[in-house]
Amino acid sequence: MTTKHVLITGGAGFIGSHLADVMIERGFRVTVLDALLPQVHGDAAMDAEGWPVYLNPNVLRIKGNVLDADTFRDALDGVTHLAHLAASVGVGQSMTDILEYTRNNTLAAAVMLQVLSEGGHKIERIAVASSMSIYGEGAYRNAESGERAAPLPRSADQLKAQEWDLTENGAALEPLPTNEDKPLQPGSIYAINKRDHEEMFLSVGRALDIPTVALRLFNAYGSRQALSNPYTGVAAIFISRLVNDSAPLIFEDGEQRRDFVHVRDVAEAFAAVLESDKRIWDAFNVGSGKSITVREIAQVLARLLGKNIAPEILGRYRVGDIRHCFADISKLERVFGIAPKRDFESGMAELIEWVKTAQKPVDRSSESMAQLERGKLLV
Ligand SMILES: NC(=O)c1ccc[n+]([C@@H]2O[C@H](COP(=O)([O-])OP(=O)(O)OC[C@H]3O[C@@H](n4cnc5c(N)ncnc54)[C@H](O)[C@@H]3O)[C@@H](O)[C@H]2O)c1
Image (cartoon, rainbow, N blue to C red; front, side, top):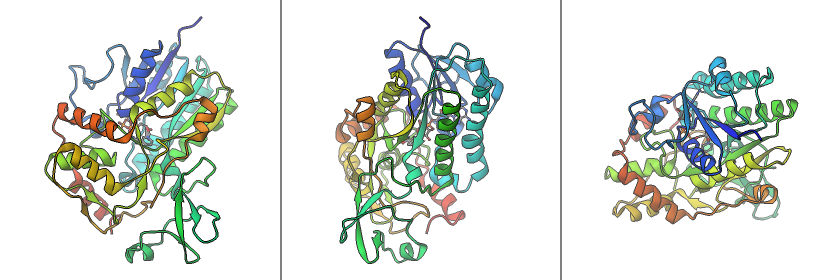
């Protein structure tokens, strides 16, 4: 029997490093291929070879870029399973660094798939990281007719008038859990890149007869999240504000709903998909199945950090932001028999414990706000 060997691209990052832990625990050999992008790893504690200290000591490490076909081909040596997580991950930043995002995400996918299509490897299964951002707005129900709705983004006029909630023919729209059948309406270059990722991998995976699953991740949180990277998770950004005694900055009115899923639940979803022997080519949501408002997140974090700091509700908006999106996770449970295990409060408490042991996060919110303003993306 050949040893199961997974290559995790982006495996030095937040989710990839947790996936590496889970796969090692499950008896896989694990190779990590990561370019160690300075924006992600710049402020983290690194070892003498330049790898994050949190990375599992049992993983094989290759510092390299998936955009380089030879690097990727060489990394496939002996590999049976591929988890592709490497990406540039900032939604707002993708609207100003359009070429770089499309190169590092969509073109990188093309390079990898080209190499896979040329054969000479032993890949049996692929899991690729997609994102809830490809949905655009989540699913809704018309409060009067009861009909389901998949509304278009809010207009600039509506947002300028600070009318944050969605309506349809004058009737209120109530948010519903979003399932995988919701039409895709990606609202940023990052989201378009992720949709490309998903469709490219599913299409080529099918053609090569390699079972392939795209996981549409909702908002992941947990230890090892890049706290100083202003383009990543809102929880990390709020924590870096609060530990620096600044108020979390909230766009719109703070009532927008999201789905926060513990990184270990995300890693276990990847592991279940990679370990399964189902012959499947499909996309699945990975979320907690619960929703929380952005304002509530700021409040929970302030309480857990022991800071008496209320969030600052800006009443401003970012072009392309959606109002609500949270996951219907029943498909993943039905097909792969897995469900998330961690709850939000204890997960956040754990994240905070990690922050206390990590280097003091630098608050880069004003830099990212200035960049958004320059790009006319913050109104
Ligand atoms: N964190 C979330 O909430 C979330 C939500 C939806 C989707 N995702 C997706 O999950 C994946 C992992 O996200 P994350 O939060 O762990 O991000 P992260 O930034 O912590 O990790 C990404 C890793 O990929 C590496 N990388 C980037 N480009 C590379 C390249 N061209 N070649 C090799 N390595 C490269 C980076 O150095 C980094 O270590 C991404 O594909 C992201 O789009 C994440």
